[in-house]
Amino acid sequence: MPHARVSSSLLAALFALTAGAAGAAPAGQAAPDLKRHQPQIDRILAEISPKRIEAYVAKLVSFGTRHTMSETESDTRGIGAARRWIKAEMERCGAGTPLQVAFDSHVAPVSARISRPTEIVNVVATLPGSQVASKDRLYVVSGHYDSRVSDVMNYTADAPGANDDASGTAAVMELACVMAKYKFDATLVFMAVAAEEQGLLGARHWAEQARKNSLNVAGMFTNDIIGSSRADNGKVDNKQVRLFSQSIPATKEMSETVRQLVATGGDSDSLSRQLARHTKEVGERYVKGFKVSVIHRADRYLRGGDHMPFLEQGYAALRFTEPAEDFAHQHQDLRTENGKVYGDLAEFNDYDYIARVARVNAAALASLALAPAAPQNVKLRTDRLTNDSTLVWQANAEPDLAGYRVVWRDTTASDWQGAKWVGNVQEATIDLSKDNVFFGVQAVDRDGNVSVASYPLPQR
Ligand SMILES: [Zn+2]
Image (cartoon, rainbow, N blue to C red; front, side, top):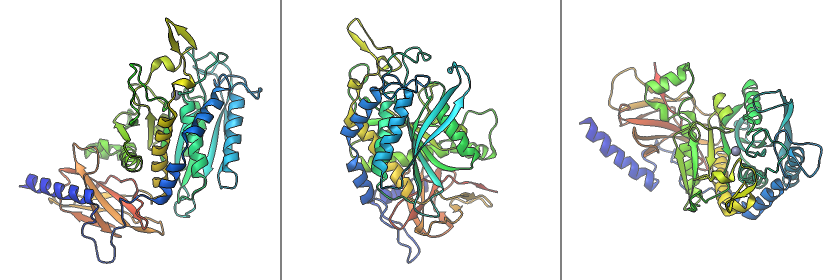
């Protein structure tokens, strides 16, 4: 019976995945060790410092307000002083490394949340990749440095934004400073973004420019509200972070690629879902005892963040957010009512927790930027009906490529359950029915760095 055959094969493969066994491979193409920690990633994670993150948050809060329309002339108050400090700080810690720090500026016209033409300035630190075949592949990590109070148009009141989103901004600064001392094949872009609260304007500008310039943004993470491990009911949960991940975009028209994805049941194998699956695996492997809770939704229910403009441009993009938000501590005027303190104050942050989330980011970004690109043009052969599955794909260009791994999972499972190393080939037949499982193909380099999986579309 086909069903029994699939089940036993899945079990065997699950065992193979757990044991790290390579499966049958052509002679001379043994699988690299895909489970080992890369020493460089362990070193980066060890260097990430809760103390420095705390100091960054304190400095950001010290600017009083970082509202997008707040003043820009003062050196001590307002968003202008804040962005000049962020840039100077990243230049200081990136000195002697290839890190390039620049402003990305545009003037936003009057809109729903912008009452006068306003200069929107992102601070962008780029760490160029060192491998010719990979340096045009970009991974972006962001936090937004603007802040707000109860009235989104109030640009004078104190708006500390310690959690929303000095936490994400500080994490990104720490990532840039630590990672700049290391080499990666692909390029990393660390961004402190403005005008999130006024309608995602800073992120949208960068994402639109990226698409216009045909940049290959292979993945984007926004860190927004990663500061507190304490829920509004007082319960502390510092053992997990939520990772929001879109299926397919809610557009009126479907592209042909999306249509084929949906037609083959692959709505949980969108680019963002593949990135989330990969981030969870790597994050949990490197940050012991910490869970990356993938949520199959673009953001919190009907809400948004700086990953949305990247999704709109067709890029894979995810959002990291603490497990349970306390709404008394975000978007609030500073006040005390009936003994309860309202406001986004630094005292409510948990810096060890922010550092843990930063480490998940670092592990994922480093692993992605060390690994080859996800295989391109992956297809499932459909020219005859069979109960096994033949996959084909285009060869990768990286000089340190070792070969490919085919992964699969039950159609109701979220994470890969089986894997087979197939060597440096462009075609593989797996003894499982494409009717019953989802497949992916990953590229692997000689050090055992594994790419995100690519979903096979039907070959016609
Ligand atoms: Zn935010």
